[in-house]
Length: 141
Image (tube, rainbow, N blue to C red; front, side, top):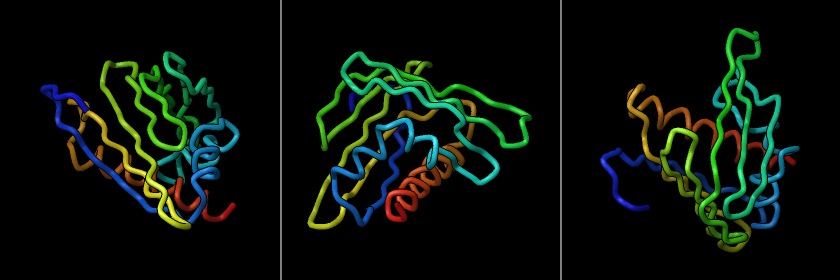
């Protein structure tokens, strides 16, 4: 990832699954809505994804009690099937996802530029929780 004045945070997980299944669950909206939340009191009621360079994505993330919601959105800058998905978020921050298959498992690493509103550890914890939910979802389906 190119250098900016922003802190880059890295989160990672290793999933017991094929790269094909990991890729499908990461990119298909019917799967995204099942795993894209950091805690049980949040969910993703709507996801749209056009996984190609210059394609866009929008995930509506909402509190289950209806108290708040927001759209997490961006534009893809690099897509290499089964390897890399890079994007620029709506606020201009960049993120890079890498998928590294090894035998019967895949390591997913996400690097993203931190925002300035929330503490680094809080951001890292939230993104790691989402990645942990992804792992749990893929391995149980």
